[in-house]
Image (cartoon, rainbow, N blue to C red; front, side, top):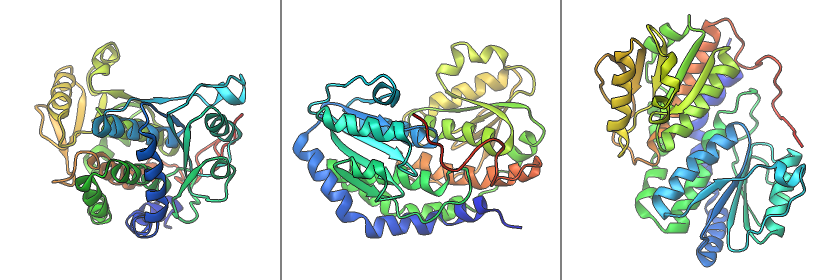
Length: 340
């Protein structure tokens, strides 16, 4: 029987094409606000997979616009009631449901503190959207699987579309228009060597750098959620500052390499860990002692990790079933988690 997760992953090319086709006016209005504001700081408000989307956009904004981006803990507003001085800043809130009280309160507080607020959510009438100055509705349709997939990808796409319009970057804008095709290709890739290894694993590291670190974090979360596997995400640099100490013979490591300035560093880390005896699997390049997984080639560096996430989602759904789990109903989790 086809799972909701697998069906929703298969919908990603169509869903993202719909966002690109129908959301131009919403994106341009928010982008105009940011161009007029010219913020010296961007903050993000999110939890779970949405916070990984925020991490992705942190790197994208910093790399393309040269503006620092910081994640703000929602509890600063919702629990501690501490106003923040945010005059001249922009605030991106990301939430699939737009309903969690802490996210809503932080977005309200950010606006009261002087920030230009933009909500990225699947529900344009959600409380988070209502307290924000702008909303970029994902238009992804109902997501029934507990694990966010198509809404995660479209959230990152929405943020990248906002960035491209704000900075008037024609090259990134063109790369975004090509994403539905790239996502289609990503769904066809065979990562069975990684599945063979992780089907019998109890733990794993997932590595990346730059925007790919955000996808590593998302991948590690999904391995926990739907595969019952204790996975931890690290920067391919940070893993060498301590966590590599427990990497011994046959420790599984999944490294996300993409064609950007960090690739040689990711390869070097993969080779280092393979030299310690780890079972290393790497996308985007070859490395001594590592198994190379296929990836979609010739992509803009700011979209390449997002394309890899689609290959990962299809892989994770199959791995979940292979390990005896139902990918649609992770234990002890609900689709909408509302925290204060």
